[in-house]
Image (cartoon, rainbow, N blue to C red; front, side, top):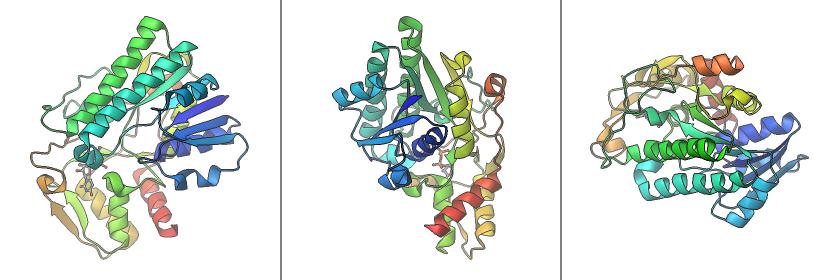
Length: 320
Ligand code: UDP
C-alpha cells in the first residue's frame, strides 16, 4: 500500500506514518513544519519505504504528483490547537479550507481514497452528550474566533461529502476527540502536555476557568489503530466517524492527577478564560463521543486508559 500523509510530521501524522511503515506500507509525508516538527519523524528517516517533503499543500504540482503516486491519502495538514486558532484566525481558516480543497481536487482525478481529519470541536458547545455523528453542531457567534476552527473543519466535511455524493470520490471523515500521547507539544495550548510540563518543572498547573469542564482523552495509539482499520473498511467510505474514548475527567481532576503521578510539588492555579485566551472566550462544558458507529464498523474499543496516557506522556517528557 502506498500512502501519502499531509501533515505527516505532526503529532498524529507521525505516529500513523510509523504504524504504516511497520505494516509494510510505503509512506510519503508532506509537511511544511508549521506546527509539525522534524523531530517527530527523525526516527523514521532512513527506514525503507519512508520519504518526506518539507513543503506545503499549496505547492500544487508537488501535491498532485504525490497524490498520483499514492493509493490512499490521509489529509492531516491543518491549523490545530485552540491557542493558535484564537491568535491566528486568518491562518486557521485559510489553511484548513484551502488545504482540503486542493487535496480533494487532485485526489478526484484518479478517485484516490482520502481520509479527512476533522475534530470533535465541530460539535461545539452542544450539551447533548454523548456526541453522535448525526448530532447537531452548536457553534457560537462569528465574533468569537474559537468557532472559526470548528467552522473551517465543518466546511472541510461538507466539501468531502459533496465530492463523494456528486463525483464518487471515496472519502472517510474522522472526528478526533482530544488525542494525546508522546510527541504532542503543549505549545499550541493542548492541556495534557502543558500540565505535565508544568508539574515536572514545579510550576503552577494552570487550570482555565473553574476546572469543572470535562474532556475524554484518547491515546494516539488507539487513534492510529482505528485509522489503519478504517482505511481498509469499505463501509467507512462516505461516512463521518468519531474516534475517541469514553473515560471522562474534569480538568481540575486532571490537574490533580498529573500532580500526583509526577510526584510534583506544584499547586493548581485557576486562570480566568479571558486571561488564558481572549475576552469573551467560550469553552465547551463537556465533550464525550458516542462510539457505537466505529464499534459496529471495525469493532473499535479504546485500549488505553487516561492513566496509561498520563504515564506515557510523563515518561516522554522525562526522557526528552
Ligand atoms: N486547559 C487548561 N489549562 C491549559 C490548557 C487547557 O485548563 O493549560 C483547558 C481548556 O480550557 C479546555 C481543556 O483544558 O477546557 C482542554 O483544552 P485543549 O486545548 O487541550 O483542548 P480542547 O478540548 O479545548 O480542544
